[in-house]
Image 1 (tube, rainbow, N blue to C red):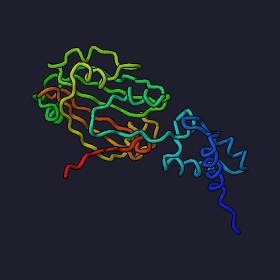
Image 2 (image 1 turned 90 degrees about the vertical axis):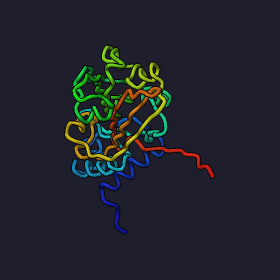
Image 3 (image 1 turned 30 degrees about the vertical axis):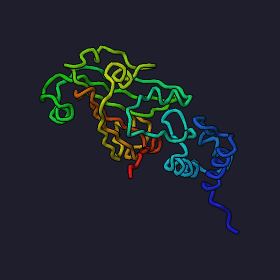
Image 4 (image 1 turned 120 degrees about the vertical axis):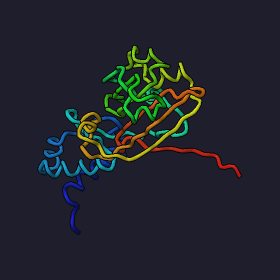
Length: 237
């Protein structure tokens, strides 16, 4: 009987350790060098084993930090507005947000169309990177009607305050429009989310209204291995 290839043996060891709770979600597995020594194989063999498990969403490779056991995928609700701070906190994990940009910009033709404003008019723009347990989970780019919410660009979003949470508290959502598509990670996006270039990602674009007023347009992008979509509907007969 032919024995398993070395990289398959390494995968079996990792998977069994996860099943037994030795390697817990969000914890780091042994380094490639440690696995090389443990199984007496080349680094290329170890890399192949880990790469395949990463592609399946079982492991997360974080540049400069190591390889971690992935958590169960977050469910991305598409029938309600959600605040990522609440979503992560309710799961018992640690949220952190890094505000990359917050400023007033002129509306491009595309953004003007999405927000129902005139091209060139002032728009509040926010770019944020959201983290769960120090792992980058989602990149957000949000555009807000500056005339209606001039104080938006005066906020400090981060540890406990998110753009979504702020807007929902001050401008309750009355209507939403979601667009969901699969995209491949650009070099810049891959660096932000600590994933490989061209890795599959989910992009959720959402427009929200308060009353009859269109208030916000946002693009939220996450690695496909970290999110899944959920839709619950009641069918009336």
